[in-house]
Length: 287
Image (cartoon, rainbow, N blue to C red; front, top):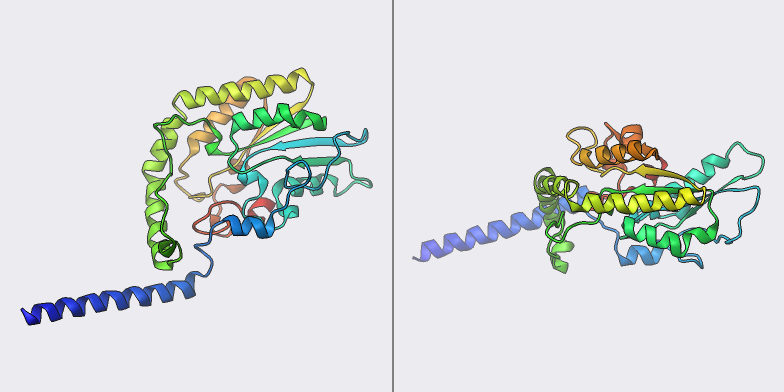
């Protein structure tokens, strides 16, 4: 009996030492691979103008000589994970549009906000967006902008304890499990969502935006942003891009698919905030 207890004790000690060693090795090798955008990051890097947008101040009255583009979107478009506001893709767009002009002619106003969906974009467009008198509205669409039925909970998980959140070993294992989920349950959930009442409601919201802009003679363009996962092969949410392409074709809406145009076949590891947080970084925004 004594030998059995001794053996169990030695086994436990060996497992603990192995876990500690693994934790130490992963902290050295992985660096910031497990970091996420949290409130501390927002407090350090994000500021808002008087209108509540992550952008420079903009007057409501538009200069006659300017072509004003109003950008709608969620955290991907707002620049969650991009430290400098000037490096977000809407502000990069503004720079490139004006680069070869003697005087800046294009003005891009980024009204995107984390967690917003297409119904929120519609509401904010009426409450605030039209006040800026835009010549064009650009919608940065992401796969989770669709209204989701309550029975579909794609990618949601139970909150981890503080200890586990800070453990590199736990993050390493959790990331592998998450990737497995993306290949299985997550993809199945997205497919169900885009073949459910949620997509029908999404079309209603998009139609309301389209018609409101047409009545006001405002140009409309949709940019479909990719899920930054498996861009090289077995891309998991192709259905999202196919549905949006079909919508744009049927409604004669200008649409650009950033996955097809820019990201297909790329290695996403250098284009995201971290392995744990798949928001695009400054390099991804530049692309």
